[in-house]
Length: 359
Image (cartoon, rainbow, N blue to C red):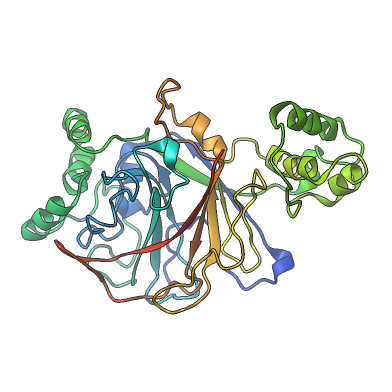
């Protein structure tokens, strides 16, 4: 079988103790065409690289539940899974945020949409597109018109102009649609092992530094969870700090292994988010079942606060995006429900669940 483009994570049936997290880092793409949909990209910013370019999300799916305005595209993750290899040979999750970035913790201010395709589909071939193919296969004229009517970003036109290298037209189209974040590629690597950096050993000065940072930055935020704390650091802190300090040190120590990580991904059973705070944690029952198949949704990935400092945001904008972390929970079997019906036609994009922890 021809290999698919490298997904953000490889699915497996390992036991919970063998959970492995993949980390996402941002970088400039070698070429703008590398982030077009026929390359199945994982990326931050720019316009969405729709997996299904015809049956786009409905207007309701792309509307902020707080402001009633069109959401802004934040990122997408290409992440096929083995649990549904027929219907989800290609699979991607798209994340959108409210234009009021200071209100992302409110319901409906952040939305995640899952899209998947079979290997045999109208938009992509059975094998990866050759390097000489700069742009994706174009839609038929009538199909493209339907796509453009539903798409606030006019991606069907934008991707053609990117393939042609027409930067001026691309800029003009971008200016006419919803505000865009700077486009960057998500590069994926396994999380380093704790002993690779040597920063979390018992008695290390790193422990004291993390505790000092905690005490200077956090006055009081309640009890913290130490589930992600490396074992040696637990021993070091057990008698020296309260649970709040231990949890803050857990987040700092774990992310210190790869300080520029912008995304953490693991769709294996037992994977959990790395929470930076103990406030506003989801309780039992807060993560809803998949409304289509009834399965308990599972953590898939989280957007880290480190991304904010790399997005070239306006520091003076009171409505700029802000979060502690954004955790995305999805159907564990990637079920294939009937298409979502909307005013302009049906959508091949299914909404999943998002939990936002404020900064």
